Image 1 (cartoon, chains in turn purple, orange):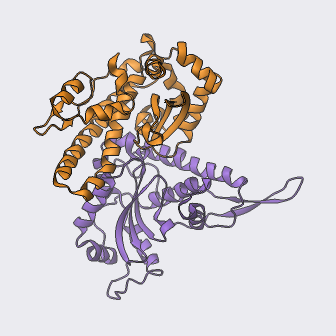
Image 2 (cartoon, rainbow over the protein chains, first blue to last red):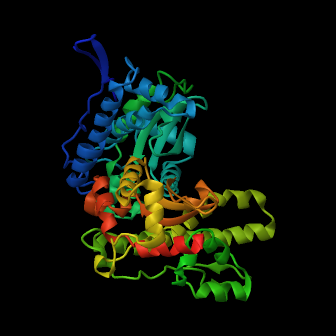
Image 3 (tube, rainbow over the protein chains, first blue to last red):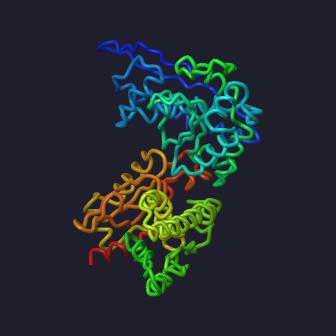
Amino acid sequence: MSTSNCKGQLHQSRRASKVLAYYGITTPPYKLDALEPYMSQRTLELHWGKHHRDYVDSLNKQLVKSPLYGHTMEELIKVTYNNGNPLPEFNNAAQVWNHDFFWESMQSGGGKLPQGGVLQQIEKDFDSYSNFRDTFVESAMALFGSGWVWLVLRTEEKKLSVVRTSNAICPLVWGDIPIIALDMWEHAYYLDYKDDREKYINTFMDNLVSWHAATVRMLRAEAFVNLGEPKIPVA
Amino acid sequence: MALRAIAGKKTLTLGLGFGPSGAAAAASFPGLGSGLHARGLVTFSLPDLPYDYGALEPAISGEIMQLHHQKHHQTYITNYNKALEQLEEAMTKGDSSKVVHLQSAIKFNGGGHINHSIFWQNLKPANEGGGEPPHGSLGWAIDTDFGSLEALVKTMNAEGTALQGSGWVWLALDREVKKLKVETTANQDPLVTKGANLVPLLGIDVWEHAYYLQYKNVRPDYLKNIWKVMNWKYASGVYEKEVA
């Protein structure tokens, strides 16, 4: 689960003390070669070490001159999304969060089937796991340009749904709760899969996706969304 | 070369020409319609590159050129053709919601075909004149509208680097006011989506697939090096034809 990384720092200057917002980069919950052979160490080194880190550094640079302070990362994303007229900090903030979420959406020995409450909810909302899987894969294949594919829990409809977003957009901005994310920007798969997006997506579903993380997130989500079925075991 | 006609809207109008005259005219341009269906729908095929895959090294690797051409561009063409067939069917049936629904697939895949067809013409091996700065009227226009070629390159590189996600950066001619502009488009939107009067002179693909294998995340290096294989003769040709 992502936690807030916001710390304020007092920056002494000659004129007045200035308080800055500052966000740190989190590390994936596994070593960079842990996802081989499905996602190479080289990809992780670049994707996390360069792309993700760049987003963090750029965000911090922007925040030096910005009045935004005191937000958790999730709040910062909603604030900078500005109801569809994103502020310049949005792209960096959202991409920092998205990538944190993405690393945690994968695990070594991932894939296979969801279990327990998550599986039951998927079967309830998609009719079957394979229906859900097909929907997810199709949605990812149909994405034009850069973006993400998500399994989200829709807070209003109170059901799971597959959504795809462009560039940096994240379902948090609509108040939905993400459960799983797949990065469909080309940098996420190009070194390992070149243009074969279908193989990348299927490999993610079969070998990388962390249903454990999904379960933990569902657990947390149930504190915010009444799924109304006390029969569903929670883990 | 008559390939100048590929630029701008002419590709679309020629491409959508129904009947034998449309196909005959189109068949003389590589990359334009070459399949002819029973009802006159023109479909498209992958144009050949005017150079070998490895000819643009070291600015752009042969591996990238081959993937970019044979996989990415081909996929756009395949999906464009599919969308056109579906569109024709929907139009014949009068199925308005399907017709409108198909527009995004046509814009994306058709745009991808248009943009890449221009892109291949924009590049030239260094030993065949790639990278040679523009002379003549385009050179003067650049000096007038941007101050110098260096300033133009700097602007285009900055815009290309700043582009979030996928897209293109263009050197465009506004044919109404006869001025040069730098524009960016998102995803595969063709330049005309930014203005009906805009004619593409040069386009640089800043989708990650255009540079990732070679330059990884360092898009600025890709942008710096691509000018070494830029085909200014093509841009000059398009420009002179428009302002004539």
